[in-house]
Image 1 (tube, rainbow, N blue to C red):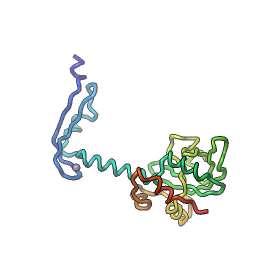
Image 2: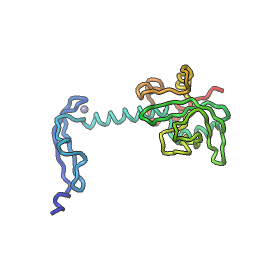
Image 3: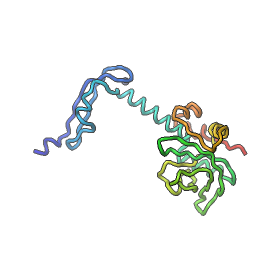
Image 4: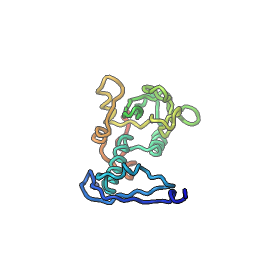
Length: 199
Ligand SMILES: [Zn+2]
């Protein structure tokens, strides 16, 4: 009898898309007798059509990629391999904790710490992150955390220097205006052009 309730079941409902206004047939399927959202929550008249959902997802991907100044951990590692960091070099630390995007202008105090060639900086810590970073930009103390090291970015760097403190907080919308929209596939070339560190 419990097998009956655990059978996968699909319910559908016609809804109006809150973004584009189109009518679309929404559906959800239960797994092991459980629906992803409560049936009463699903049975609304408004929703988001698959096209608009995809568009929004792509928008967020672009925003978050811009937030990372178009860097990935892999491309940062390649960058620091091709352009070894040096003493007193200016770099950017991105801290996304507390639901904010904080960019701090930091300086390299040890470009090749230990055999792992960790990069030690001064100028930013949020209390739980360390000052030591792997070449990928991951924080050694908290590699899955929300603090990462990025190459210098001339626009972000200039903006920080205009202020009185060595960091700036920006919204995702402000960041994308500053650094522009870049598709992830063409990012590497563009990113290295944008981030040449002035010596
Ligand atoms: Zn829509």
